Amino acid sequence: MKTDLKRPVWFFDLDNTLHNASHRIFGEMNRSMSDWLVTNLAVDASEADRMRTEYWHRYGTTLDGLLRHYSIDAKRFLHETHAFVDEPHLGELIRAERGLTDLFRRLPGRKVLITNAPAVYTSKVLKHIGLARVIRRRYHIEQMRIHGRYRPKPSRSMLRMMVARERIHPSRAVLIEDNVANLRSARAIGMRGVYVRGYDRIALSARSDAHPRCLSGLALRVESVTHLIRRRRFLR
Image (cartoon, rainbow, N blue to C red):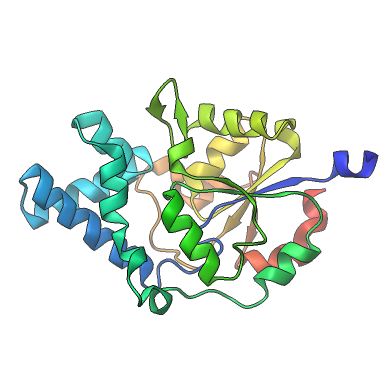
């Protein structure tokens, strides 16, 4: 039992961390969100793309930006913009490395998923990459609410809440992420971080404080999540 108390608790992001969302998933998702904005906010396609991108850069999710600036139904937005997960060709959009199940088996400590994606999308992607039965503990965007308001990553208050729910001190928590802004928030509350940079080095936040150079000394860098096995000694 004493050994378990010293082991890290691994908080894994989903998209571009456990699978290559930049391969095709993000393209599908971006088109779906822009189409939703055109239909529901009466803007043209160019403005929809601009809004979607700006809100993602500024707030961490397009949804958060919409909730701040418009009166929208969040559940409806999440459902309709992720409806493509019900298509029979979903598997064709997903690309993941081999060895993920082995990674989770060999990595000591509890594994938790923490993603800004909705629950239905999360469950179906995990099933396709073979981790549905491996990751039992999951936090998705529907659970990221504080006082009735959505607070997705990179919200520090939400990260504190998730760590508290796992009943651990932040120093035992390790966030494995592709998003620099999220890693900076994790570090600010005392979590450790692993920056997974192999899937998409271009799609970084436009914020000046979210560039990888700002991670110096704040997070371990790996090309792939599977490399954690080689580098885990640095996180003890």
